[in-house]
Image (cartoon, rainbow, N blue to C red; front, side, top):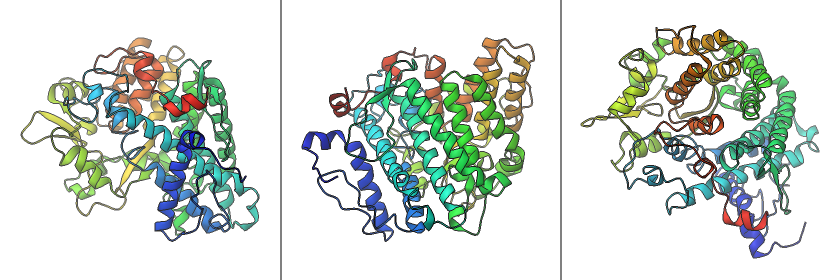
Length: 484
C-alpha cells in the first residue's frame, strides 16, 4: 500500500509505529540493518528480515525484547505501576507513583498518564511486530527446517493472545458485553475498531488454540527445556505449549468459564512434577546469595530474560533513593505473611524478603542479582508460574468441591514452607480470602494482584474500594478520537 498516512492518522497509529521503530533499533544493533524503511507512513519492508529462517527467529526474539522494556513488563506491568496501583507498596507522596499513595486513581496525573499511554503504545507495538511475522510466515513455510515453522508461528500466536489479554484486563470493563479494545490480527494502515470484551476473549482463545496446535511439537512436552540449539534452549522462558495452556486458563477465568479454566490449569499441573518441579528448599535456603533461586525458576512457565535487571532492581529496590524505593512497612508486610501465626517459615518471607537497613521497611528480593549470580537464575523476570494454576484450580472448585480447592492451596503453601494446613471446614468465602492472601504473597513484583482484584471485585489490600475509575485504565486521547 503506497498511500501516505496524514498527520492525525499517524499520531493515532503511533501505538504501532513506536513499537516497530523500537524493534528496528534493536535489530539494527544486532546486525539486521535493513529490515524496514522508516518513512512518514506505517509500512514495513519485510523482504530483508523475513526472507530466511534466521530472519524469522531474529524477528521473534526481537518481539520478546520489546516486551522487556521498562515501560512494559520490564517494570510498569510487573513490579512498577501495576503493583503500586494494587496497594502492594507504601509510597512516598513524591514517588513517581504518587497518584496511588493518596488513593487517587484517575490516571490523569502528570507522572502517571504518560506511563499509561506508553503501555498502550508499547503493547500494540509488540503486536504489530508479531503480526508482521504472522502475515508472512505461511507463505514462507518452505524455508524452515525441522519444527521451526510450527514453533515460531505458535509462539507468535501465543504472544498476540497474551498481550491482548493483558490489554483487556487493564483497559476494559469486566462487563464483557461492553466495548473493550481493538483485537489487531494484521499489520496494515486501516483502523481496527474496538470489539466487545466477549469478542476479544473469543479472539484470544482462538489464537491460543492455534498456538497449541502448532506447539504440539514443542520439545518441552517431552520434558526438554534445554537444547544445544540456541533457538530451542530455555523453553521454560519462552511461550511454550504449557504457557499457552496457562494463558488459556487465565482467559477462561476472566470469561467466568470455570470448567475450561480448570481443564487448562489441570493440564499444566499434571505436567508439573516432571517439567516444572516445585522449588527445592536447598535452592532457596542456601547461604550463598549467588546460588539462591530467588524467582523459583524451576516453576516458571514463561519468563523474560531482562539483561539489565540488576540495574533496574537497584534503582527501585536495593540501592534506591528513599523517594523511589518500593517498600512495605514492617507491620503491613509481616501481617501479609501472617508472621504471628503460620507464616514465619514461609520461604517467600524468609528468603525472598529483606528488611531495609536502618528502617522498619521490607522489600522483596525476588529480582536481586548478586555478583556472579548463577546463570540458571540470572536476569529472570517471571510472567507465568505453576503456582497460579493451583490458585485457578482452587477458585474453580469453590462451591463445587471445597476440599479440592483447599487441597490445591495447601499444596502451594506446603511447597513454600508453611507447615500448617488450611482447615477442611473453610467456607467458600474463606477459601476465596485465602486465594487473595496467596496472590499478595506469591506475585509480589509480578503485577497479577491488580487483575485478580479487578476480576473478583475484591478491594485492594490498602483498603481502597474498587470502581471502574480505579480499575479501567483510560485509552490514549488519539485512540478515543480516531476509534469511536
